[in-house]
Length: 473
Image (cartoon, rainbow, N blue to C red; front, side, top):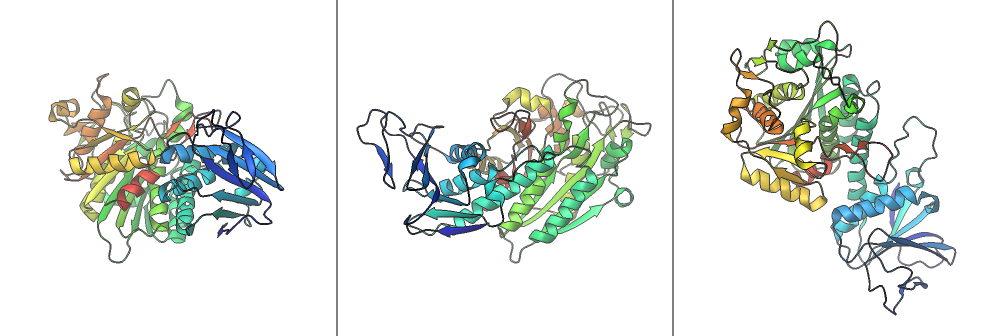
């Protein structure tokens, strides 16, 4: 796929995408472009509307943006066009860059167009979207050279598309080994080093908490370490993503919603996608990422409620509930990252608790950190692109929820309240009092319903957020 700037539309045939800000709906002045004229009583640029006009062997697609717009809105609007108007998007497609479009809105539009190629029918025989053909060229008309912005928008979309596929593909496809192989192949392609610990190596290293969760599965756990090290890196960022490729709940087996538990590795997918995008954009920051990947399954070897297990950090853990397993693998991931790599800032992402969904619904992720500067920068980055966060407390008043009489800590409070907070307090226990750590509970935003599919599916949340945050350091 290539990008090409056109100087004019002389002798052009194809589809022309024309963004339009809303005008007065009773205005006597029609909306015009390329001698295609649309009266305001037919189309006036209202948000989420469009109008198709055929003239000069061209399909003029006027796209309503509303009176004002933002990054997320533009991205969604153009994704809708690509997804639902693919029948009029042939080999020749030209995007008109209007004066009010700055580089961020151009990036959002281009990224949205390519996100619109995503199709949940991974195992269906479907026609390839026009944008995905090798010879497709996305053309644009602008007073300025926008090629770099177009390419960045496509890179963002590509990373999010990979992330969405990892989450949406079934668990008999995406198991821990699949994630490890994906990381290895992507690292070779984009330029970051990957090391994978199998069960034997993880045992030698002492990743006891991680290994306990995977004991009941026939699929071997994989502890994935990724290192992106550009020359003259400005800072060192550490990432950890929860990689439970399927969660039955273990012996505390889930009684509802298990069919959706292929999404319990969405935190891992976000970290994997972030590594692809960070390396693809060649950001001048060192990034070390860890994905502890395993299945929480059920058999004679599964870990038990009331077990006391060990951890990489040397702390003992009382198991109250085997369905509170994500925090166990994250504990070893955080401890290993902080002890061996010493990043200046650490961020973990996980579909960790239903409590976060109960608090925020599907509008934003729960943010936990004691570093106010880190909190502010993460929220600003999320607000800029529509991947929002809201901070919840990590007060010591909640510390009693994870205190155990038999072990150093317990993995579940047993209470029907403050579940997201007690889970975050558990993770904090394994950060060695790191002064710049944040936990993102993305349970409500990583997988859900929207207009682009009939069933719940991945959103790609976290990939752009983390990358934007690092860009803004």
